[in-house]
Length: 599
Image 1: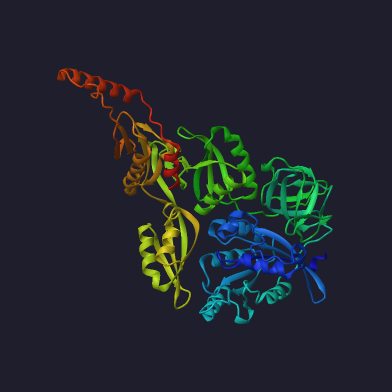
Image 2: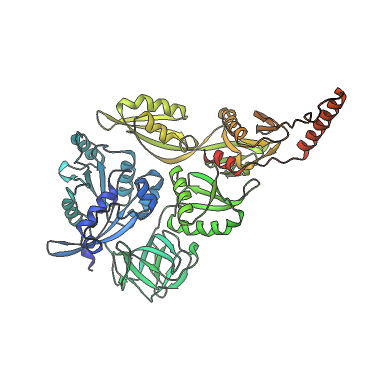
């Protein structure tokens, strides 16, 4: 295929604006759909995971190669359907680096939303041609004029450049295909130069090892070629080269501008890194591609196998999952209560939830997930700076000069009637108001600085609740700010339980500690002695609950006799309880951990 007839582009939008439905229409308009199933009515053709189909969201970027006959010529469209949720923005940025253009999809009933703006700026940073499409025009009682106004202000385009479409019934799809052919430039690059290809994704196949997804910028790659990964200078022989149709399809070679995959019997997942440049080992390209900016995890949580013998299996599963999700990081850690596990970094709470669910479904792992935390910057009196994401690594309070918490800059787009409730909620979450802009007469964008710890748990749910589902949120890390942060230890019968310890601002520590103790009191079985549940900051107890002892009726056998006999039995029982309390261990059931850590 000559490169002049290749078009590489992705579909970007806010969550639930119709990206996957539009990609389904592209497939149905191509020759590929009739080859796979002429009568198929299936939707979400590119969403291969059960999780994606169940939740109706895209989690992974899905590349596919389609062929069209346009005005007597054959064109190749290489499409990437990308996720829309803020937690998967790294997937979007990786897809953009492998494209020359992007279709920006806007739901006419929702208008421009927070992630629409964020994805638009990402596309602009990559110098992509943007084709604006107004989707869901089949819906009744929608304000198309308002949506037009918002798009023209965002992109600075004229009304004539915006395509009206309905991905549901296929209206506007031929016009979008024509715009892709006319507006998105063909890939640049030279076939005569040494191979230069970008790894934008990868996955692990149990039969052929690591499969790297690549976009070729210069030269070509074919079976039997000796290649080198430029980041670590590892060399391999290519075993298979192919393209993405509905499934992977082997081909002879991939040339300039083409998107596909290769396998080279790479068995160690850590060898292949997303953003690396692939070149020919004998004739390497002089300069590697810039790759991707290093992603910074926002939320940290511990993952522990329920069965301690599954530790090695979990480690292998995490390495394979990391291949498929470059924004996920992990390192080993040990907990006195939970044993051996891993401290993992995620981009957000949905990302954490999806990774946990994928480990359970795809790798058959039974896990305990500890409560999410953020990374704090701690400066000690000797001016040493520590980054603490795990409460167990918190230094002694006497050594701490200053603690700073991570701050994010958030954009909240909401109908104007809900500005008051949104500002009230933001104040409760310690938000610092910056400014407000009106997108139109009925929609506004509020800009706030939030402590990350306040918005990772339930802020998004509460925001949707106070705005009846109409608000949208996007945020990015902006830096650190000093705050009074304390480490709260949870003690059971005087013994600290490290898995339940947490970091919090000082004024909320007592409330959070009491919440955990109240749950523990209901979940830990009663013993033959009193159990003290305590929350402490350093040596100071800030909250306490008691689990009342079970009483054995030792006087049941005394059906008569002197009172001294009964007193003697009660004293004997009292001594036994003292001894039991001194040497007795309180076993915290697995259900208690799972119930508390889940929340």
